[in-house]
Image (cartoon, rainbow, N blue to C red; front, side, top):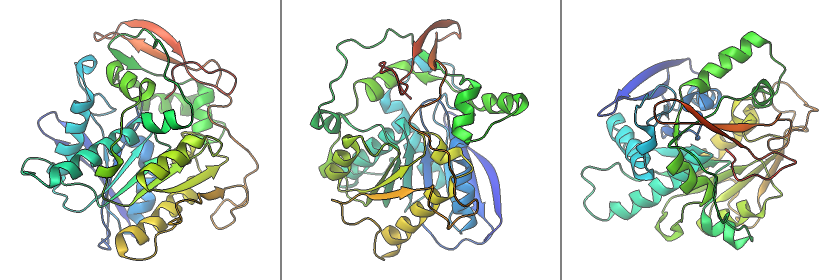
Length: 349
């Protein structure tokens, strides 16, 4: 395994922060660019990035405007187009020709939208835009409107009343679920610092998480992989069918834990094996699109740690989780309950 060095790269004109994980021995693998979710940023992908870089792949984890280390004063004015511009300018600044684009949660929805747009542009003048990705990896994505409608999901008649900027500080139970371990107060305070400086545009949140974006499957011209933790939700299979993607289901993980917990490795390894086929000309795992590939970490003995007896479900164990809504000038405006196993409110991350 190669040693990994971590660097910060600033991308003009908005001083976006990109965290680069560079292997001491580059194996010539296609680099991966990662886009985080609504309330996190580059840090959410740190364990996967280290794992992939140690195998000889360059990894770049982005922070869009308002995320983590990419501070921005006018978050409430940001649009979907602004976030797509951030992805494009980062890829262009990194000088990447061929690359893999990965996205998590809302970042997966943005990654899909970016890829579709990039392929549509590639046939015309592409001088000032980033090229389309060689492959697309969507980590527990916010699926598009068409997939939701196909399985009978209906958008809310009226969304929650929010101010321009959104901010979320998780309770200790949420952090413990993401890490899959009990932590002391000091570790909790350290984890909260990762969330503290991330603000999201409520306009974009509403468009992606509540109303959902429309997709254009015909525009996507690259192999795609969807990873989901809720195998009982038929929307993921419908989404995979529509974009002709491989679908991997990871039972026993929660929305965040399959990226951040100590048992992340089976997920990272499965992605690496899929990428080796998708970008290396070999057989792509899960190419029988009608049959999702199901993993269960409780019986997987091929990684250090062995069997794990705990079983997590999507957002289970949260003690009244809520999204804290802040105004553009930082004043607290309201709290909106998030989705739990027992309740179904309009807001979920």
